Amino acid sequence: MRFHNHRAIPHFTFPGFDAQPGLRHAVLTRLGGVSPVPWDSLNLGWTVGDSRERVETNYRLWAEAFGLRRQDLTTTWQVHGNRVLVADAEHRGGSLGEADALITATPYLPLVQRYADCTPILLYDPVRHACGIAHAGWRGTAARCAEATVRAMQTVFGSEPADLIAGIGPAIGPCCYEVGADVIEAIRAGHRRTEGILLPGPRPDAAYLDLWQANAEQLREAGVQRIEIAGLCTACRRDLFFSHRGDGGRSGRFGAFIMLTERAM
Image 1: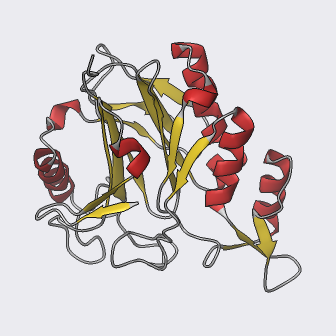
Image 2: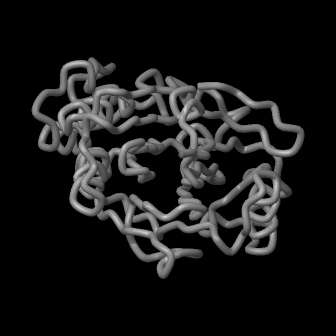
């Protein structure tokens, strides 16, 4: 990913997405907001103990930095599943309901999700001019949320998976994500193969889970060929990102967004 040391809101972008006319996106960091420890500072999580006033200020700050209208930011109530909602001119702004992915073909409608170890997944179809964003922790990964988002874009917009560009953003890496038997069983049930996804752990009943590769494998199996993986571990890079595990369970949430603009003719 490319790091942009913006004076107000530092952020990352995917080079493959940067090259697409008619598309804007970013993975934000924990920097640039007003929240105190342990949510310092650009916390976008409403349910982690931070005050509503500070969280709203953080939303306003980053929206203004990107030239977006706060009232247009469209998100979901994330529930660690694989439900996908469609945002359009009539369904925009605020939370559209319980889901972990959003898709749209409506320009100037920013889709937003929040993370603190779970995997950001961004999708763009340059042929149909449609995009999507998903949130996948281990539960969402086991439920194949990444694949569900691709299938929803196929159904709703007629997207061909081979046309899609995907970006897998910062998440807790296999270096830091030790999981137990329940997670191992769920990942095995949700994946045809787990080589390179479940790595040997320190004990027979434990493993290290690679969320990046698990979601990339789902995208490849769904037919997506162009996939960029950030390879940034949120637990290792707590200077840049919130990490639920790295912060001992008391942490904020960083954001990512994707938005269509008018496509150049």
